[in-house]
Image (cartoon, rainbow, N blue to C red):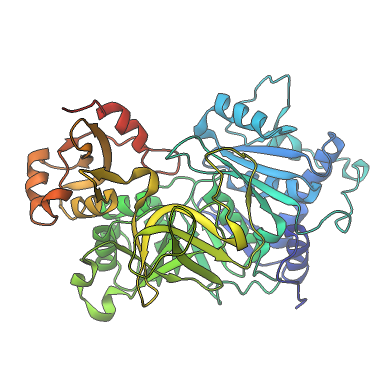
Length: 514
């Protein structure tokens, strides 16, 4: 096995892994298609040479817009962009062609690569090329130009990807990811996950999470399983069919898995760990999944697009180990666990200075990895990347004396009523313990006398009314933390990754009360 430096270019790392383990099954789609490392590199090299023949050069920014079933096209095209020496910008087709075109223009993309399920577009500023059309004809490959010399300008400080934040608290921000950040802590042995054979990444292609699934497949010894549709039966069927040991689920998918009954219809006993990230997971969902899949421990990860690979992690032992559901009914703010390997955590005040243990402030994370950075420099982004490698998370939290990190609220979503802070996350967590609540969002509305009031919007099943939920909360929250109203809605407004857009709710219900 050939060693590779801890921080290297993704091209160097993938070439070395494909040389050492060409038959390793790296990516498996639930329709039976798959890629070995050797095949993945071979197909990507051909596409990359086609792109060079089309005029793309090192440093060009190249957008990829992908439909849900196009994992193989996405995987090959993403690696081809790296081989050209380009910068990848991934999008899901759920954004719509106009939005993709606008974001691609904002990033100064030279071209758009689209999967077969995405319609072409007549764009005078940049071509929209079909990935399948570029790769269909392998004849004449000998006449294609060579790829750029990977040793020339292939440093770890070059940008590999431009990713966009979720945009739940405002317009999405563009974050630059260097090769060194992307490959930090990984080497050609693929030992990052400690010998885990299979990981289900239940995320859509073209998203930040979808890109992370490709990185797992390319740079670790684990086999990444992916889905054409992120629905409960598809998740459970993949686990049962392939004996998957670990699964990474978005919180919204985890909640649907609980409510759908899929855990009763499939044999999920192969699972040893369920991992969640990207947003808070209600303790009621963690408890329900833990009981439904008693063989699996629960891992809740905390990080951000900006701070990666820095993270914190809360680990819950498998329910079968103790059978104690009460341990999920934690008092106070939600535990995020402790800092992960190579990560430091602290709580800071408005000026960025550390505060004492037990004091509410803004969470900041730091790791030894090369930092990401914003391409947008304005009042929204100023101060996020602080001095000495610290990244301010935009979240309020508390750090206990024992090092446990607790989440209070998003800074942008915190509610202050009569001078008292109300944690929207804590109220949501309490609402989710009601058996008739499928999803909940708590948000601020303006009030003439108190400044702000808390209100809630919930998705329910069965005959559940707002008054019922207020009575339910009265036994679980302090009177000052109770929402003024609970609105029962058919569907909460969500983005493409399932995160709730509370700004839509604030605009809908936010008339000033007097």
